Image (tube, rainbow, N blue to C red; front, side, top):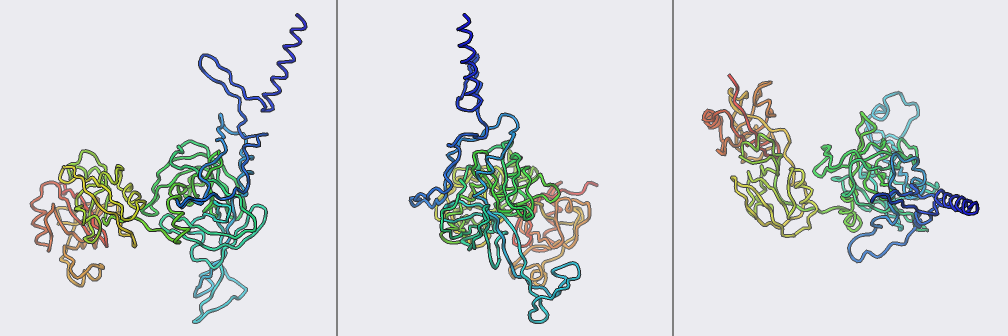
Amino acid sequence: MKSLVRVLLVSGAAFAALVSTGALDVEVHWRDSVARAVDLFGHGDSKAVPAAADSAAADGGSGVFWKDGSNTPPITPTGVPNTFADLAERLSPGVVNISTKKTIAARSLEDFFPFPFQEPFGSGPSGEHKQQVPSLGTGFVISPDGYIVTNNHVIEDVDSITVRFVDGKELPAEVVGRDPKTDIALIRVKSDQPLYALPLGDSDSVRPGEWVIAIGNPFGLEHTVTAGIISAKHRNIEQGLYDDYIQTDAAINPGNSGGPLLDLAGAVIGINTAINPRANTIGFAVPINMAKEILPQLRTTGHVTRGWLGVVIQKITPEIAEEFELKEAKGALVSKVDPKGPAAKSGIEQRDVIREFDGQPINDFDDLPRLVARTPIDKKVDVVVIRDGKTKKLTTVVGALDEPELTKAAVKPTEGGSNAFGLRVQNLTPELAEQLGLGSDASGVVVSSVEPGGPAGEAGLRRGDVIVEVDRHEINDTGSLEKRLAETDERALLLVRRGDSQLYVPLKRKVS
């Protein structure tokens, strides 16, 4: 009996030692549940560390020149992780410090420095001073042959770019391509040895609440590591047509721009791009899937060619939905159609509500520009619209966007009308049309003033807006406007022109 006890004690001690060293992976089954002992951060697991410089695989004509996905199993913490050290150490060779120099000119020293500056520097013609201003940012290697991703604003219009690696090595870089609309840039260095490349992950699959880390150079402090979670996805921060940011509370500061936002498998899921200056726990990253769509074009042509539909759209508010008798405030309202664009040729009309594009639903008007932009040029697609309460399916051929024709109308509706609607108007003369930047054939009535707190003011109308229609009736002068507004009951639907945009504005009559 004593011998049996000794055997059991020795076996138990050996078993515990194996578990504690990670040599044994234990599953305990209890009533169909599984308790698993795992090493959260890969201590002693040589398989968790990939080769530092994998050779680039042939892309097979797909345009892919990066490693897609990570071979490393995700590090899934149970509770709060006690360290990110192994992960940061493994990934740091793929993160670089980007320093740039840019020459700017000013008329006086005070344009450069808000305080007296003693040392003289070069002066140009007419007393113009020139100064080379340094700037810092971050980037990350995506292929062993030297391609590096960063933000466009980090390298835009600079004279020189120097890339510094974690081991202190410095290499000059050249711009391969850049895209201001998404703030993504591709640069390249030439190295005698293959570089450590970070794999690109799948930003569509990540969820708010998942752990992430950021590595960058805030305020020039090289390879600073911060950790947090994904706070939200699909954030629109009013930076452009293609806003679709990942929000994170991992600390991001000036100098982090262009650096990677990484999941716990070590894959890049975002490019750190923007911050809220009032809170260092609110940062924004461009989803890596958006970058994957344009990186092949940046490498081959240096710029991005996007799809074009040829419409101006606006958000459907509850008020707009009521005016158009829509069941729900979803879709993109077409407020203007370019007569030379693909939309006009396919039969899309002003006042149509686009609800589906190429099989994808359009729930918010921001969805449409992103879908059109990523659609291949000359592709034939189906577009589902709601017109006068009826659903129609149209077919269009996507064109190429050379200029930002696919624009969003201002979110705030515009104003216009008579005293009953809280505004004053005047006829559109050729002189006024020229001042407003309108063509010689422009028509309508100009809003000359808006009553503060009145219906027009609350609707967002401004001085200088041009009222083109009231309840689908064309407006050519103040007389026709007053007549149409007098015929309305409590509400009027105005079509207003503001600059290059046109948008519909529901307007309520004053309550007497």
